Length: 235
Ligand SMILES: NC(=O)c1ccc[n+]([C@@H]2O[C@H](COP(=O)([O-])OP(=O)(O)OC[C@H]3O[C@@H](n4cnc5c(N)ncnc54)[C@H](OP(=O)(O)O)[C@@H]3O)[C@@H](O)[C@H]2O)c1
Image 1: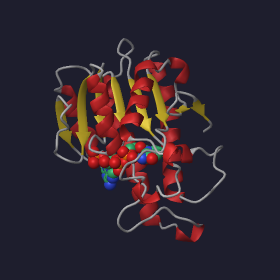
Image 2: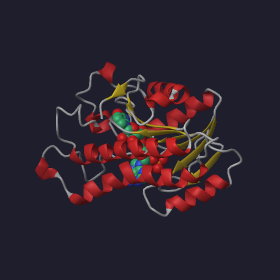
Image 3: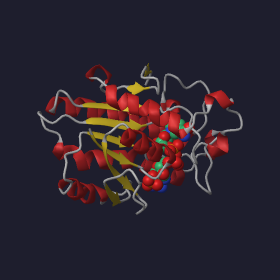
């Protein structure tokens, strides 16, 4: 397959590119950074959370020498130097909720908009948004992490809508959201102390699991939130 990985300089994105490259796929990459990953044949430095990225990415896709048939958007944010995930309602601040929506939702939305013209009845696309199990409404028994949960839940609804709209244009196209499993990365690093070592997976193991999903996903998974083991999770 010809696979585009966005958020390519993140821990999961980088490891996933390496694994898919090892499996013989042809890889392209998007990242805010201009560093082209070693496995990428063509790289574009762009921030998909901005609306202007739609045209930038669309033009870049037109000049690729091979049509993309798989896309994995890995972009996501849980914390930064000034913000930690909220423990209670009173911790929620609009500016951080907005930032979470920009990265966790808008960077996926804009990439989908940039790609949409390429989806044709005879050219199916496999779309994977890396989401999170904590965004499952049905599976939420702990509370907290308001901005991350709300923005990733919005992402799941985006993926559900994509799955419906794109399947009308191209019945073999598949759009899914995926929970990668708790993975050792800069995103999870501040929250790892309460995780049992056997429940904290390496980026390489997560990449292997996600690569299996990308290679084997079928139309009956369309529109679903899929766990790292390929099983559906409740929305
Ligand atoms: N690690 C886990 O335990 C875990 C669990 C559940 C879900 N996830 C999801 O897995 C995905 C990958 O996360 P990761 O663990 O690999 O974390 P990571 O190393 O922090 O990678 C996240 C990537 O998202 C992009 N990103 C971050 N901040 C951004 C911003 N302000 N604007 C635009 N893009 C931004 C960046 O890609 P570029 O630097 O390439 O632009 C960044 O490298 C995320 O969607 C995350 O929510 C992770």
